Length: 268
Image 1 (cartoon, helix red, strand yellow):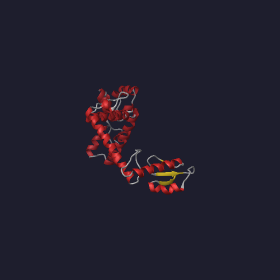
Image 2: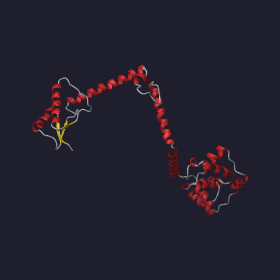
Image 3: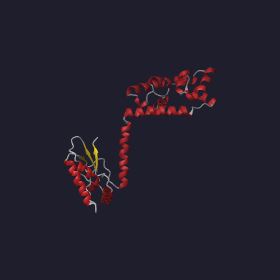
Image 4: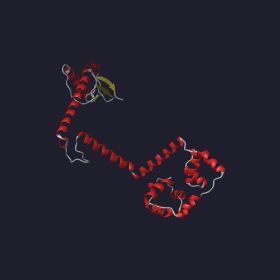
């Protein structure tokens, strides 16, 4: 069954023309949309009315046999109302009277299943109309606007070329931002120095010197340079030296490499 939003202009006009003289059940079959959509999304909104002949026919209905009523009682909790109405050719009012008389209700498992189907249909309809793309864009813009208001920043959807934070932010906010940047850099330098002291690989490409360890660090850098000249593969700031078939290997240099915190490995 289609979502009512998928009706084009021609189908809408045809539905409007047939509504007064045709039952909602027949319209639902013709346009493949739900009866609730016809009643709530079209008739109530646009003020459509049924003709007297259709109203009289709906009130007349037909009398169900005992076995038919028994079938409805046994299958009501796991069956859609639309299926029951089509099977016995009765109106919604007749089905509601039977449900009230016998205290019939839909089961919890059935309601979860129907809700999942309705959600899937709505998801497909929203994707077809591109509603998710528009909603996501509006949500991103609203989040950016709220963040800007919270941080005291002027919110703009676009910025001029060459515009920096200093011209975009207030003096107070710019000072706070620069303080955070400097503090983050200081913490990074301290972490990298600790890694060098304990002979671990750097996580950044910073060139650092450590008091009391400058000579060892200088020799380590010199050995890395010599390894590169002979064709070894050494990444900047790394303590691992790789070799392959094209490398001019030196047993003496490889033997002394561990003294300077360097590890020799074959390239995979």
